[in-house]
Amino acid sequence: MSTNWRKSALALIVAATTLALTACGSGDTTPGESSGPAQGGTFTFALSYDSKSLDPQRNISKGGPPVLRQLVASLTDQNTETGELSPWLAESWTQNDTLTEFSFTLRPGITFSDGTALDAAAVKANFDTVGTLGPTHSLAAGYLEGYQETRVTDPLNFTVVFDKPTAQFLQGTSTISLGIISPASTQLSVDERKSKGVVGSGPFVLDSYSPDREIVLAKRDGYDWASSQATHSGPTYLDRIVFPIVPESGVRVGLLTSGQVDGIDDVQAQDQPTFDGNGFYLASAIGAGLSYNLTPNESRPIMSDRNVRLALQHAIDRSEIVESILQGVAEPATNALSSTTPGWYDASSEFAYDPALSKELLDDAGWTEGPDGVRVKDGQKLTLELPFFQDETDRLTLIQQQLLAVGIDVNLERVDSATLDQKVSENQYDLYYVNWTRGDPDILRFYLSTDFENTNKVLNPEVQSLLDTQASEPDATKRLDLVHQAQSLILSEGHLAPLWEIVQTKAYRDGVHDVRFDTGARLSFYDTWVES
Image 1 (cartoon, rainbow, N blue to C red):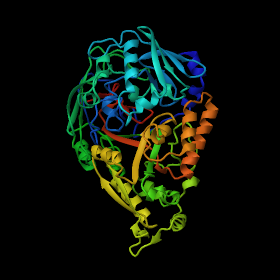
Image 2: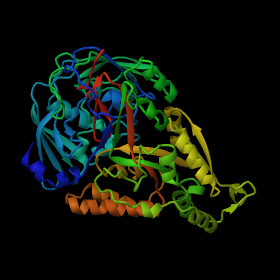
Image 3: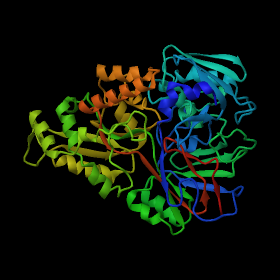
Image 4: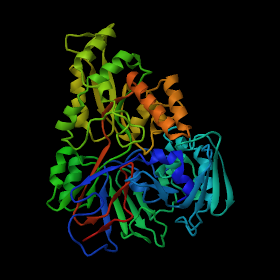
């Protein structure tokens, strides 16, 4: 790795990132003795939902990365212990002092699964086309904000040029959103990318895709450019990975306990004791990024009132939810950002549980208690619409009860991800339940800025200015101070209501070895092997 990179201001920020991993017998290896990695076999891992997109540069939901990370590689990888970037497709890189130019040298001999070379021209084709994918749901576009051009020096060397300093770009090169796809894939339409998939240079290739039913991957022969974070080189141990789509948590549990699958996604708290030994083990990770939050839609009349938004923050008893529903496997959020994210600070006192204060704020906003306990103003009930797609009805139901205790009525509606996207696009929601993973505080800008998601549907010029400025601040200390200011303002204006930390919990049978989490608590199966 280049000396310049290690000394850069950005490195100081990235190095602050850590990923907390826990497991029965370790998160990346299985308890018990074995004779060593076994070649071949099929690994079956049940997903909780289908993200409906086979394009890493457009996919934003957690159902996609477990599949897509196996198909595409990135220029860099991020160490889960130190937060530093390490080589993957690129063997080295440097940047100028103003963080407007980033020069990379690729590893020689890398090819896409269609046989074409992964060279500097291919990377240029990726970066040149990311901005043409459309404005919605493109983390990749956010990472390349201010992109001017990619200058190709020779097949292995290129420089990415921006029109302003960008302190967050290098960490973006480690993400699946900037995973490099083949030049032919960059020419596909958005719909073709999502439904048919793209050609990558990862250790697996797409074998088949049946929407809402199953995704099957096959081993790529000749693969020999693993990330420096991997524990072996060459092709994968596994021959195939099968991802059945199983939305019901109880059904996923039954599939694993009956031996029909090798692992399952999204293990609910009440089910975790089932896999604590007895031939199974759990692996959990707290990922960096945006904590679980409720986001008020401030373009809707009720949520446009700051007092109502602050009342929402103080009406939620996060500790009760963690203890009774999450059963201690997560921690209450202490800020909008996860505690493993650079720029985080403990702001829990700013939105502490205080139902008396919530009632006072609602009184001040003109909402009076009605005969059924729901507050009323000008003949309208204080009823909020909260559509969601996650298998997390239990915790949201408890939030619903807590809010009702202060007079806020919440209508919970579980929908599929496509319907939720439609409701968001049509502005048919008052609250949005979300978390986003990224090992960089710029995730706040992507989520709230009017240039990107802007899920709270409001322009706060001061917040926008702070988030824009931190994204281009080359001095690490100054950047973290700006992130601190932005979080404080976001909380004081009620733009977000933090809930609990990002925790991903998976369960496996004991014969599954070496599944790796990344900094976003996403999974890599490159090193994974199974005992029959």
